[in-house]
Amino acid sequence: MAKNTHVLDLIKTRRSTKRMIPTYTISDEDLRSITEAIRWTSMSYGVWAFRIIVVPRGNLRNELTPTFFNQPSFVNSSHVILFISNKEEYIKGEGMKYSYEQTIPDNAASVRQDMVNAVATNWEINKVIPEEWASKQSYIGLGSAMIAAADLGIDSAPYEGFNRFEVDKVLAKHNLIDPQNERLSVAISFGKADLEDTMVHFFDKIRMDEDKFTTIAE
Image (tube, rainbow, N blue to C red; front, side, top):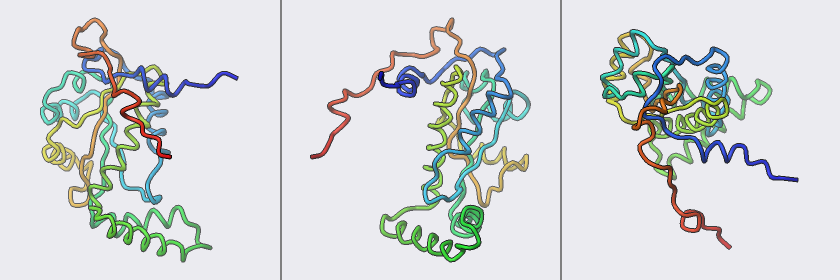
């Protein structure tokens, strides 16, 4: 039986798109497939540490554009998804409590505190900063989003190039985040690559040689 390399092929061929067609709009069905792929992605310890805000073209996108340094793909994409992660006090308090109340049934309620204690012990051993940990969790969802989009034939562009503090101010002004407990972690836009623009992908996609990248221990 031939090996199924579909997912690998998607990962190998997808590109971060620097230029997108400004008239292309993702269907509601495809957009929901992407957001659901993020929602169902793996989460460490079973703690829900981030959520997403979907930003279509419009006034909010225009207001956010300078905070993303006017990047063309941000301006012209169909939709942008902002990953909003939780801050330390919320994670240690309401965040864990809510997550475990939802995921651990009442007949195993004693396990909830066991999980909280186990997470706290692990963080202490490894000197984990909870806010940074929550931000890292959103990157798992980011990976799921890129693969889900590629499977739908939709191009994407992830962003770390933004002024997080200014983005947070805009979102707080519109009551989209609670700045005391939430912050922007990472973002990604979706659309169709403008293949007529020579700047669409910059350079060929190259990765480290496999024998240098992968070490299989004996």
